[in-house]
Every structure is written in C-alpha cells, then in structure tokens.
Amino acid sequence: MLAAFAFVIMLVAGCDRQGRPVEEFGLDKLEKGISSESDVRMVMGKPETVWEEEDGTRALQYPKGPEGVRTWEFVIDKSGTLKDYRQLLTEESFARIKTGMTRDEVRRLLGKPRTVVQYKLKNEEAWDWRYQALNEPRFFSVHFDITSGRVTGTSTQDARTY
Image (cartoon, rainbow, N blue to C red; front, side, top):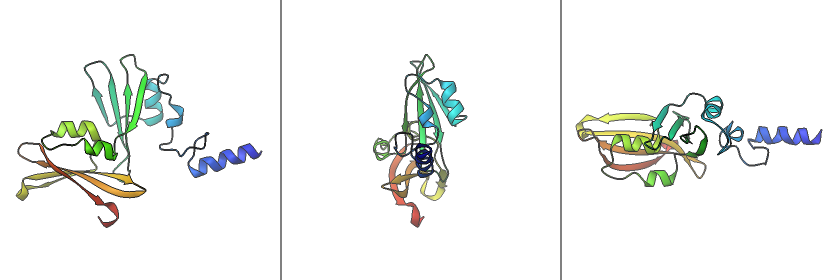
C-alpha cells in the first residue's frame, strides 16, 4: 500500500519510476536501441516534420508549442530502431545558429518556429521559439534577410515581458 502511494506521489509530482523529473510524458516508455519508429509514433503521435537523411536515418520532430517550451527530435536508424532523442531548444542548439545560414538549416536545427513575422520596411523576417532557461520562460529569435533568406542575427527576450 505504501509503495502504491509513493508511486502516485511521484506521478503527481512529475517524476518517473526512478524519481527523476519527467521531461515529457511517455518518454519513459521508449528505449534507445530497442524501441521502433512505430513505438515512438504511438507515444508521441504524428511528427510535425520528418527529415530523411542520406544514410537512411530519419529524424522525427515534435514541437510542443506555441506555448510549449520544448521541441523533441527522435532519430530513427535505417533499420527502424530508435537511435537517440533530444531536446532541440537549448542554449547549445541556439549557439549553432550562425550568420548566413538558410531558413532550412535553421529549421533543421531548431524545428518549427512558434511564430514567423515579416518586417517589410526592414527587409527582415523573424522566427521565434519559446524555451526554458533556468526555469524562466524566454524567447529565442532568428532574424533573416527577406530577400536572401539568410540569417542576419539572433536575439533573446524574457517571455514574461513579451
């Protein structure tokens, strides 16, 4: 009885069976090297984007926006087995965005943006993603030249003041 009560408390508190915080419900049902693409789709649903790689692997992306702060990517090897999964909206991913990158390159690294806004007088298009930084909601924005479609810069902003 006590074990059942502790299990219920962990679920309510958002922890898995090992007591670790749950990043996304259902991830505990997936195992790298064992789960199939079908298993991933059963847990996560239909992916928003599927990237086909030249080596036969596939990357399934699941943005949890527009108000969500995560975009998950599941890498499926050429045999159909889950190779890895990761959170795309991280400081490390944002640091990989460089001036001159194309829209497709940015979309591949970060997933679907929350919003896309054009500022025609500035010849600029801004894409943004909502994310968590030290438990604070923030926005990461990528600015593109409308004509060339290339990155001109990035910016961040506190989501509470938006």
